[in-house]
Image (cartoon, rainbow, N blue to C red):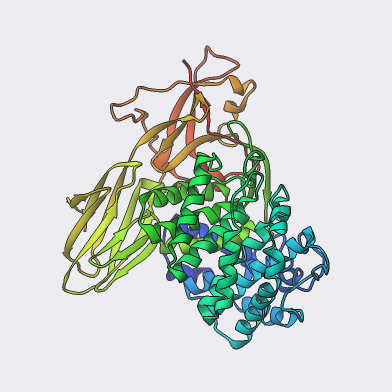
Length: 577
């Protein structure tokens, strides 16, 4: 991590932050995006720049979404500050300024219309909804009467608007193809209202949340980020009320997304649901990971953890630009094109906001054991035992689990064996050990001592996935990673006519795994955000000269962060018959 600070010229606070966190890829990626928001550019997130949408002062893009950038900035930075224990002074100054910008009716930015509900009203609702949850996330970090009063006034504004926005005619009017100014601008407010109730115990906010939740459903041409935000809000509604109807609704809508084909094989939600699938969106990917982790926490159904992991190691990491921004990439039939957009106005904040939730989900505690779920950096605790995880999964397919606190009693540590690993090879203080095999896991029970170190080696599987509705094309997976080729590293693969390239697939083992040999990296100094543990050599016949077979290096699409932002990728390959 100190290497990252030197490479990106991070300030001294970065070194302090590293000392109190972890050493793996997840931490490095969070630091990259944190530095982008806190010190990067262009554009730079100065106080005036951030607050322009709450004034309003129309000096940048999307200020009509009143409070959107303001709220996202406040929420992301407050959550990271709480997670790391670090102070960001400019955040406090922004919040102090924003409470003074609140309008008499409680909202921020441009005025609402006084007659019929318009698209401009929906934009204002969207931004104010993001601002409400942002203010409340700041309140978790730094409780103050001024901030809570501000949030309550905004929540009361929504309560007053409730009858107008919950009208069935308005639901129908804005449930078409309005996308960013559709009815999702209202339903995404659930998240902030539930949190406001959690803090104030005022039932009117919960009542409005329930009324909005009943009007939340998926439809074609819908903005996936807004819909996923609403689902996260309904899950929070369940957590507060314990009313099973809300959990069942979220699970049913989750099924609907999967069954409708709106979750792409790399774990991406398209920016707009079918039939307008054209590009991804960093906000939606962060939402989807967080939603799945939330469902996993509430149900312990492994399908949600598997789904979160799929999206995390592929689309969420892939979506992160070399600058630390998140944003958009245009889909092609076989991957993504060179067209991309760094969405500094939304996705960069939403991506940053997701990292603490991901790190916290690395472990979960049960009454009699500590469980390590995701092979990422994190820390887990039960009474008498604390374990820190530092992941080197991308470098050598290992994770180190270090005991940082232990009493004299026996404790169980359970390590999940994901579907993409054929085995777990475990060493305790450099000595091989055999744990007790559980369903999808290995359990180790002992009297732990402070300083004990487990090294977990994940034996990576190599799998083949046929393309939906087109079995002539296949995708190749190594461990949790979807593999592809990119034009920067493999320019000859993109020679015309590349659409006629044919890959030469090896034999398939009895368990269905491909018998491809991993590439052995000769240098220990691997580039930042690459995954040499997953690299494979793929022979293929070039479309323009079939008589001269070539070999390309397959790389995880997550390595997109390490290449030029406009680099096209291919991950669907046509196999030679």
